[in-house]
Amino acid sequence: MTATTRPNQRERILDVALALMSEHGASKMSMRQLARDCDLNVAAIYHYFESKDALLAAVVDERRYGSRLADVPDIDPSQPPEHRLRELFGYTWQGALEEAPIWRLLLGEGLRNEPTVMPVGRQLLDVLHPGLTAWIGAAIPEIAQPDAAANVVLGAMFTGFITHIFDPDRATADLESELADALVLVLLESRAH
Picture: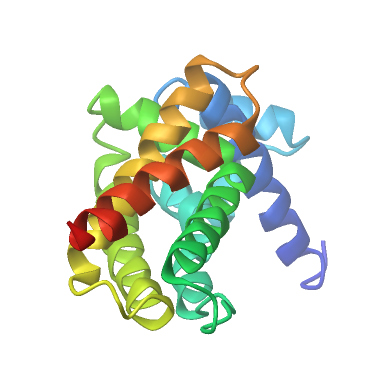
């Protein structure tokens, strides 16, 4: 194996690990099963990841949420605040749907209070909330408390994702629209009354 093949092998291990963990749960996935599904021996897995906890952390870290959230979405400031909020939520919602396997893993394991996922989930929240706060502050300055609004947007995203899990046949665009309507009502229209 050459040094040039290692990054691709590491990425493949992470992709297979995410698929296995999101399907079966992190605690039920074994390093042997992962090695078998990657057509590697277990020692090769441990070459890249010292433990299952390190593997799980790498699976989440590989998504690069911090750097993705550093880039504020390009939202036209001349649009009404309602439109900008809908667009910001749509960007957030679509991002969550693109990362469905990681969210299934974190939510499922978190609800079971699995110790391997708890610190990783907390770290992710520590990245998401400030990132959304910055996005809201930049895109919708009419919202006086972007920190509180970020909590509401995160809540809507989690509500939508849970709804999507339990009602997978429901159109995600309809769900996005319904949640965006609720956010506009709570964050913008309620301040006018």
